[in-house]
Length: 282
Length: 273
Image 1: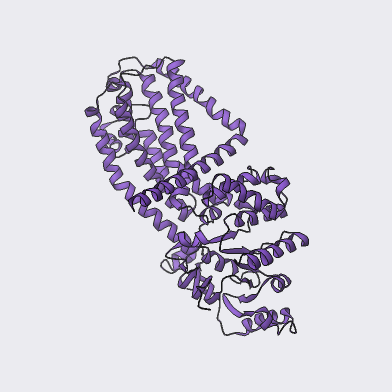
Image 2: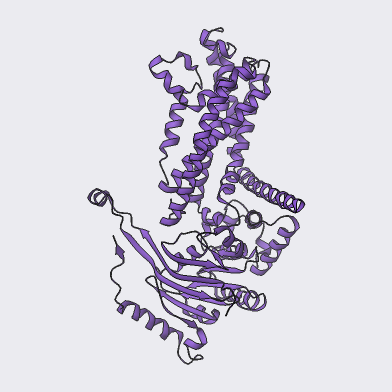
C-alpha cells in the first residue's frame, strides 16, 4: 500500500514537472520568435553594468555607509540592481501572466485543462523567472570579468537562504497582485506601491543608512531591504550565517503573513471572477 | 435510464452584474444591478448522445456551456457532469470533458499548430509517444496534417476552427462541448466535422457531444435530442424524431413557435436590482 502510494506520488510529481516543462518550452519557443528582443535584453545587461561602473568612480572608496557591504560602491550597486530586477520579476511575473492571458485570450483555454490554477500560474511565470535569474548571474559574471567586481568570501548557505526566503516573499506579493488583476483587470496599486517604495527606500542603489531618520523607518517595513542587506553581506562582506540571521528572520516573518494572505486572496479572486463571469475579461 | 447522466442540470440560475456608471454607483453604492443569463434551467443528457442546444444570440447557450465546463460559477441550482458536481469538484469535471473553444485568440499565434497541440496536450496529462500519437490522430481527423508545422498566425479562419476541434479531441474526453463550432467553416468542412462527431465519436465510441448552435439545419442533422433556449430558459426539449413527429413537422416551425411562446410569456424585464 505504501509502495502504491509512493508510486502514485512519483507519478504525480513527474506529471507536474512535465507540465512545468511544457510551459518553459512554450515560452522559450515564443521568445525565440522575437529574436531581436531576446538579444537586446541580454545586451542591456552590459550597458547597465557599465553605467554603474562609471558612476562608482564618483563615490570614494571607503565611504562609511558602504562599510558593512565591503566598502565599494560598484559592487554595492551591481548586486542591488541585479537582485532587484530578479525580485521585480518574482513580484511582477504572476500579475503579468494573468494580464497577458486575459488580453491574449488564452486564459479560458488554460483553465479548462486538467491543470490546476496554481500550476498554471507557476508554469506561466517560470520562463521569465529562469531568464531573469540567468540575467542576474550574467550581470555578476560580466561585472567580475570585465569591470573587476570583487566578491568577498562568499557565504553560500547565506546566499541560498536569503534567496529562498526572498523568493517566497516576493512570489506571495506576486500572488496578491495577481488576485487584484483577476478582479480589477488593470491598475495594480500593490505592485505600484511596493515597486516605487522599494526603488526609493529599499536600498537598491544607495544604502538605507543615508536616508533621513524620519523616513528610514519605512525601509524597515519593506522586505527588499532585508533581502538586499542579507544578499550583499553574504556576497560582498564575508558575513557569517549568524550575522545575516536577523535578515532571514525578518523575511520569515513577512512570509508567515504574506503567503497565507496571498493564497486566500487568490482563491477569493478566482471565485469572484468565476461568479461575475469575468475570468477572461480585460 | 438509471445510468449516471452525462449532464444533469437542476434549476440553474446565473446572473451577471451589470456595470453601471459612476452616477449609478454614487446613487446606489450598495446595490448591484444584475442581468439574468440563465433562469431556472433544468436538463438531463444521457451518455452516448448528441445533444443540440439551439437558440438565438444572447439566449444563454455560452453561459450554460461555461457553467458546465467550470469556467463560470452558478448563482443557484446544481450542475453535475458525469456525476461530478461542477461547483464542488471542478477538477474532476475537467478530467472528463473536452471543450472546443470558439475563439481563435485562445491559441498562441507565434507557435505552430503542432506546438500548440503539444502544449495543451501536456497540460491535459499527455506525454511522450502517447502525446505524439494523439496529435497525429487529431491532425488526421481535422485534415490539418500538412499545415501542422505552420505558425498559427498563418492559418485561415477555418483552419483555426479546425485546430480548436483538434485540441478538444486530444484527451478522448467522455463529454465534448462545442459552441457554434462550424460558423467559420465551409460547408464541406462543417459536414465532415458533424459526420465525425455523430458517426464516430457518438456512434462508435459512445461519447456525449453537447453542441450549441443557432443553425437549425445543423441541429436537425446532428442532434439526437435538442433543447431550445431563449432569454435564459429552456422553451422546448425532446428527441428530434419525437418533436418533429418523425420529420412531418419542420424543426423550423417548432423553433419559431418556441421563440414566439418565449416572447409571449410573462417574464418581466431582463435586468433586476
